[in-house]
Image (cartoon, rainbow, N blue to C red; front, side, top):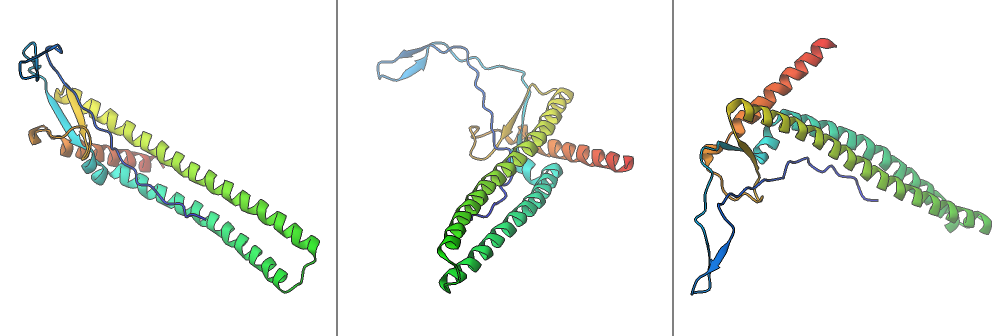
Length: 205
């Protein structure tokens, strides 16, 4: 039986944008294409970005989610592994009886039928367990992403940003000027929000 492993949460999506004044092209004598019209780039737009890798590493909510999810996965995995061990011990005891000629043919046939049934049941339970873990990961990922999305939206409106991109190494955005990096502001703000919310919840208990 495969051991169920925790898959780390991450925000890996990246966004890209392009702006140009026209998309018609002409062919030069050398065979290369050039824009028919001079590209027009938007001016006066305030754009920022945050590094999703840094956010994952420093956002307290994500660390809390990972810790909680790991605990749940460990508990579910331990319970399942205990069932597997019980099945193996049961099968081993009957195998010893068969080797020592302690069972008649009808008992051996019944054991073989039960062995197949229990083995199939464990395989189905393992599939269900993996699906449950995946669903837990997805649910928590969505909750964390929603928190980040709402905070970034409010941050952008408050600070006059027209656009805030999410940058991740290996994503579609290859380079953004470091002067547009607002990762530290966003992570600090998210952590402050997380701490204040937890303190409020604790005071209400």
